[in-house]
Length: 101
Image (cartoon, rainbow, N blue to C red; front, side):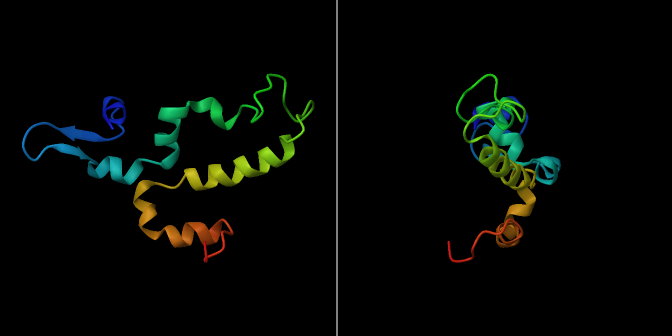
């Protein structure tokens, strides 16, 4: 949480009644992707899942095409803002996730 506060993705307050919180602006604009990239780095969405340096559409690894399809779905979900998570059911429905999960 402190790492997110240092990058001003969330806010924090000290002392009695302090803690971590979102300002109105953070609540309106913060995405899941912002938080994830803070911990995993931006390259996680573009790098090969097998760790190969030369993996791309012209020189794919054995799981490249599957990985691209999965990453596209994940990126759609990760673009949702924190404020949208209150309606997570509609996010999952849009992604085609069965409601019984």
